[in-house]
Structures are given as structure tokens and as C-alpha cells.
Image (cartoon, rainbow over all chains, first blue to last red; front, side, top):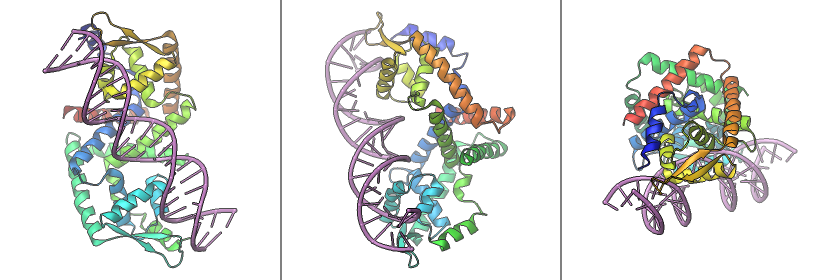
Amino acid sequence: MAKQTIQRVADFDLESSDLEELFGYNLKRAYIIVQNDFREALGQDGLSARVFSALSLTVKYPNITQSELARMMGIERSGLVAIVDELEGRGCLSRVQVPTDRRVQALVPTDNGRRLYQETIAAVRAHEDRLFSDMTESEKTTLLALLKKIRQKGEQE
Amino acid sequence: MAKQTIQRVADFDLESSDLEELFGYNLKRAYIIVQNDFREALGQDGLSARVFSALSLTVKYPNITQSELARMMGIERSGLVAIVDELEGRGCLSRVQVPTDRRVQALVPTDNGRRLYQETIAAVRAHEDRLFSDMTESEKTTLLALLKKIRQKGEQE
DNA sequence: TATTGTTATACTCTATAACTATA
DNA sequence: TATAGTTATAGAGTATAACAATA
């Protein structure tokens, strides 16, 4: 059972690891928890986080192009193809030819896509409400503001 | 140039997307920024975040086993093999037979491993200090506390 | 029976590079 | 020349399932 080792680790637990003071480590651990809960909440054939994000932005900005969407999501154009394929396959949006520029395909949400989005955003909010139920409103507001501050700093550079 | 679309997106930018209010989305975006900066800061042949974490815990808890380490890092045992292989390949630790339980191989940091760890943790702290330089001490403390609160909640379940 | 370390394997997410059709 | 969408491909990082050795 390697009791010695387990014992010693427990003894040292009082002084925390260097990792516990790092933002990167804590962000990752927190993110994994939220993401796993997201997946469980949306179930077997629910949307993945990235597909949900793409649907959200398409519903918000109908006729958005894939390049614009990629830029907003912070990923490469090429990575969006599979995401849009999935949303098109689920009947959530159409790729529509734009007469003024035939290179572009505007993404247009269908009624079905809008309906699925409303259902999904409700489920996502319920999952976050539950997972963050032990935070006060003030703590939640602060946390969001600080996360956005990191994003601003990162996007400056 | 699909000016219409770009124009409309810009117009709507005033009211923010639903995603901006979600913890999952903001955590992911923030985490990606910190992680990319970590990679840049540590350079071409620097340690990856996960290898750095494993080294940190091995230095802190010499003689830890791989199973314990996996548990602490929140990943599967099998995933640790490649990480420990890399650290062994870099001469940062040894797998040592434990006489009392011959299934176990204790991870023992070498002097070289401890030296690399000290160099790396200094570089990591410098990277985080720089990246978070526009936050006050109070904001940083609050952010860490709130991230830990998410972790506690997640690990309860 | 259960656990440790390990291998094989597959899946998700992402990036890079090159292609095509347009502009 | 440059851009939009696409394909092919590769690389992290992770999980699951099974195995041998050992408890």
C-alpha cells in the first residue's frame, strides 16, 4: 500500500504546493470542473461548448461569415469548418451564398437553430447557476469582471 | 469584402453576446491567454504546463507514487506515464523501486530536477507577474480565492 | 480480488500548410 | 496579390480498456 508515502504526503499537506498560488494552474482546474459539468448538464447528444458558442454567435449575428466567427471565437478559420458542418447537419443553420462576394458563405440560423439555442442557453444557465450556487451575486460579478480583465490584457498584446 | 456583414456585426457590438455573461466561456478564454503566455515565456524547449506541474509536485513530495501524483493532478494514471518519461529523459527524476511494495515506483527528484524546477518556477512567476501587472494585489488575491472556490465546489461532487 | 504501472487505442480540440475560387 | 472556405495532416492532452506483476 506504500503507506509511508501516502502518510508523508498527508503530513506535508498543511503547507500548500507552489501550484496553488499560480493563476494558470487554478484557472485550468476551475475550467475543467465547469467544462465537465457543462457536458454532463447537456447530456449525450447535447452541443459541445465550442459548437454552442458558434451557434450563439450565429443567432446573435445572422449572416456572419466563418472568418468573422473564427476571429470572434479566437480560433483558426479551418477549425470552424467541422463546427459549422455539425450545426448544418443538425439543421441549425444554412450556408448561404452572398451575391456581392462569391467567396463568402453567410451563416444564417434556421428557426430550428434558434429554438435549440434558446433551449440550450437555458440549460447552460441552469448548470452555471447550480455550480456557482455557493457564490454571492457580488462574488460572481467580481469573478466575471476579473476574468474579462485577463482577456483584455491578453488581447492587447 | 462582405462589408455589409462586418458592418452589422460592429453595430450590434454594443449589446454583448450571451457568452460574455457565462463563466465557462470567460474561464476558457482567460485560461487560453495565460496558457499561451506560459508557453511563450518558457520557450521552445521549456517544460509544458503539465510536465511542470508534475515536477513541482515531485519536488514538493519526493517519493510520491505515480498514482498519487495522478490523483493530485486530476488526471488518469495512464496519462502520467509519458509525463514521467519526459522528466526521467531530462534527468529530472528517477523511478525508484520500493522494497515494501514492489508494484510501486517512487518518484525521486534529482539535483538537476530541483535546479530546473527552481529556474522554471521563477520564470513562471515572472510570466504571471507580467501578465497580471494591471491587477492590484487585492484583485489577485480575490481572483485566486474565487477560482479555488470553484475547485472546492467541483471536487465536492 | 484489488492496485500499480504500463500499453494500445481513440477522441477532442487546435494549428499549419496548401489548395480553389474568387476578389 | 489577398481573402474565404476547405482539406489534409499533425500534435497536444486526455480517457478507456486491458494486461502483467504484485499485494
